[in-house]
Amino acid sequence: MPRRRNRRRRLAEWKENLVSLLDKAAKNAPAGSDVAVIAVKQMLVAANSAYDNFSKVAKHASEIADESVANTTETVKSLTKAKKAA
Image (cartoon, rainbow, N blue to C red; front, side):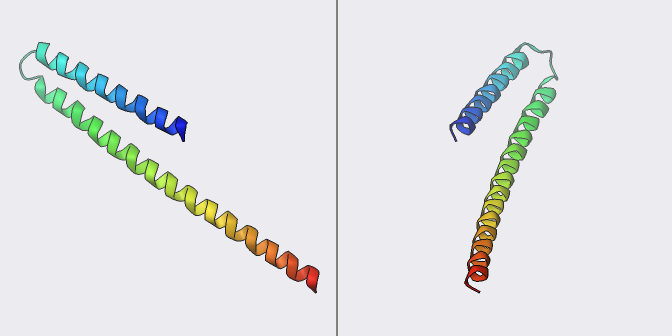
């Protein structure tokens, strides 16, 4: 878990730095370039949303796999005990 938190923190810092850089570039850019800056910011929002959704799906899939392995292990144990008892 610490690696995941560290990754999220670094990603958040990177995003903040990029947004700050875009804001500075927009101030010094020629007129009309604000549309490009807005588009890049919207792209960042969409990318962050996609990353969050992917992370949630991956976590859910991992939980399902863990549960399946646990259930299978219990089934095999009970079958083994039943076979030994017979």
